[in-house]
Image: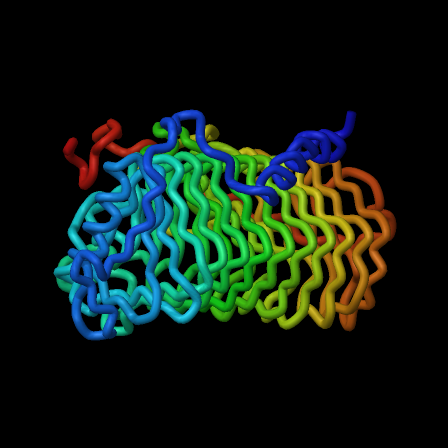
Amino acid sequence: MSANRRAVLAVAGLGALVATARASAAPSKTSKPAGPALRLDPRDFGAQGDGTTKDTVAVQAALDRCAVFGGGEVVIAGGTFVVGAIRIGSNTTLHIEDGATLQGSPDLADYPVTQVRWEGRFVPGYIGLISAQGAHDVAITGKGGIVATDAIKGRVQKETGLRHPALLEFVDVQALSVTGVRTQQNDMWSIHPVFCDDVVFRDLVVNGRADGIDVDSCRRVVIDRCDFDTVDDCISLKSGRGLEGNLIARPTEDVVITDCTFRDHRWACIGIGSETSAGIRRVVVQRCKCLTAYTFAIYIKSRPGRGAFIEDIVMRDLEVTGTGGGFLRLNFLDSGKQDQFPVPGFEGIPTVRNFVFERIKVTDVPVLVEAVNIHPDKPLDGFTLKDVTGTAGKGISLANIRNVTLEGIDVRVAEGPLLAVNNVTGKGLEGAAPLAPTVRPPDVVATQPPYVLGMTSGKPN
């Protein structure tokens, strides 16, 4: 059986995940019997909702009371509620009605400092505006807004190096659902689930000056019918950086992205990596529109020193236009910062295999496919590009790939060959132009002292 066929079969079971998630986010196996059906209004706890008064204490009191009574719903209605960081407990739904807004406080003092994952490592940072940790059956619903303050500039506080607050951040949550709301974030990431299982993001409008949704070491994730307009990656899949992420070994896996619309203004519509040190696998993207991308619509990336794998990626029925770079780029040699404690040697070169792209329509993309930054010591094993139509400035460049299948490529290219290759084997390569060999990067060596889990700046915590 070919590598490409294995890729298709490996992700075929994800269809059931889509069907289940379209119905609802099912309760987790850890759910307790339902308690009183509470429906609480933060105004009963002293909230004003006047857009000026800080309502953090009142909103948190309603959420806490809901959780301790076994679950229920906290309803935000009819106003703008200014809050600092608030946390949702188990069996609790935060419902934001149409016309209501949760507005982030402009004061960093209203966001406690804790351990947050930032660019693939756990570091001190400000907690998200809305968060949940170690909880189950958590939901945010409604047609209202969650809006960050514009007073917090940048992603990191210059004076302290502390990471700024994400808009929504969930850590170790089982059965998480965010549906219907519109979000507006400042310069930090918008939505960041970490170590979460059984996650649904549906019918969201995600606007912001940074990433839209960063799926970080999560399992069984559905992103469905969402509309993105972001200044960085609309969706990014990650799993940790360097030996810390590699030893924690929590991959991002079984991700389905369907019927979404993407507008990116700094990087990519969908990025995989570059923090991939626990692995990324079994990802399906289908029926999506990539309307704007500053670089490439799809950008899959890593580097030596990450280790782990990126495998079983299937993307189909995509429409791509308005890209600054092109449709697809693969870069496994030098993407992202090298970790202070990288995975050394041959083990640190990511294993990449089984990528399928089919039924793709491109309009005036500068480059169709750029896939040359692949390590010659670990070639990509299994790459299918099938039934691609449209127009492009330049064609397909491939290097260091085995088991390629090119079929039904009907793209008019403005300059250069449709296909150029080096060290590539497979089908559909007839008539390819020669390509210069990829330069082999230097080996990654182990750091001293040896890394132990929990180490930060060369010393154990």
